[in-house]
Image 1 (cartoon, helix red, strand yellow):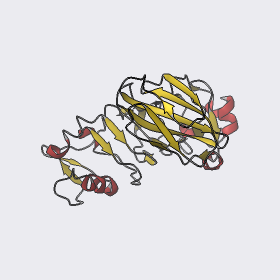
Image 2 (spheres, rainbow, N blue to C red):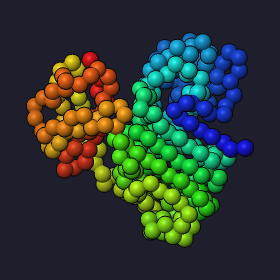
Image 3 (cartoon, one colour):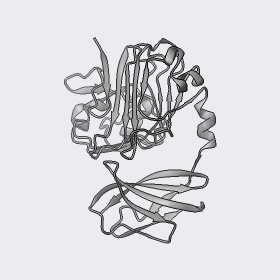
Image 4 (cartoon, rainbow, N blue to C red):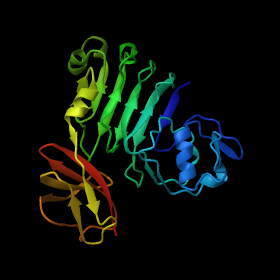
Length: 276
């Protein structure tokens, strides 16, 4: 039987009782307590189903969560923010397929790193519009994977070479030879023996947008010298492009969620903004 994880549909094969769902990650549960969602206000590894079924938006950013087990019970959830989170799936050694898709709807997945270092049965990795994804660590699993299909897309592009795949032999992986000869990677890819070196070299800009939500025009607060601004719809379509200026008028855009890609000669940043 395949082990199948779909982060869009939240189908994690985990234990749900009639009244509660297991939340094994204490940082996850603490976040639910801080947000006033977990009504018993106690870290006990579970939360009442009645507390979470109507939750539409969940901001778990910067909480050092490594296990999102239990998220499948948030049946009404539309926006999930786990910014700067590391998604460690190495303990799910039977995992065969991993899907992280926004599906063009209002779900926002802001995972920066996925760890798959002990997953010898892995066959498929798909990440669509996971805006902050920078690293997929396959080192350890890669030597046991005879066939692997990888599809990573952002902004509606076929591939996204800014995502670094950490593997045992990056040269062989890049040339799809040796143990990597049967891997199928969509478009260009970036392989490294240590993605942390690359990530550290790629500067993350300190950027904030205001006002947010915005009605007409937004401004950018940063000490960086901005080169260009790109605005993308939640489906990944570029809808506006600006050079550096004082204010950025998006009054002509429909209401909804957009992604602002800020670029300078030192790096880039992707920020979410709500247009009213």
